Image (tube, rainbow, N blue to C red; front, side, top):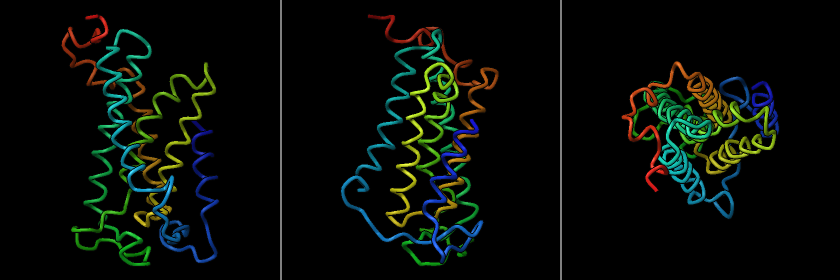
Length: 205
């Protein structure tokens, strides 16, 4: 997965400016852009649509095929990543760029200050990582899925919802949960499935 980290770092380095500050010295507020491809509706479509695809794929395939197991790993990674990101937001309570151009505003009130880490970037990274880990060697084209976290990270920064380090942290959490879920001994979801569900609904047709 070294390539994944290099992609993420290259992406973030392209967002740096001379005025960068905050965590790791890379944070600065981008000019607000909520139009076209960067619109909030597209961001939400990616978040909700990706969850529907992996959960639907898991239920359809079951866990007795390579693809089905990967869908379940992705689902488990998504759930873990979402939970960890939300916990981080509650702990760190970082101010979002749109609420004040201060990358060092940590431990604020918990009402709106939930910038660190990026939950949506964590979410999509956690979903695609098991697929890249499973199929990346056999089918290099699967690496194209890495474009989804990169797009979402840029969109969230253009919406002034997150700093660069928020996005990087989200990617790191998503990669971590994806690799953890990739180990079948950690797959509590698959182990807990009743027999009828584990074979997948496609067997009913």
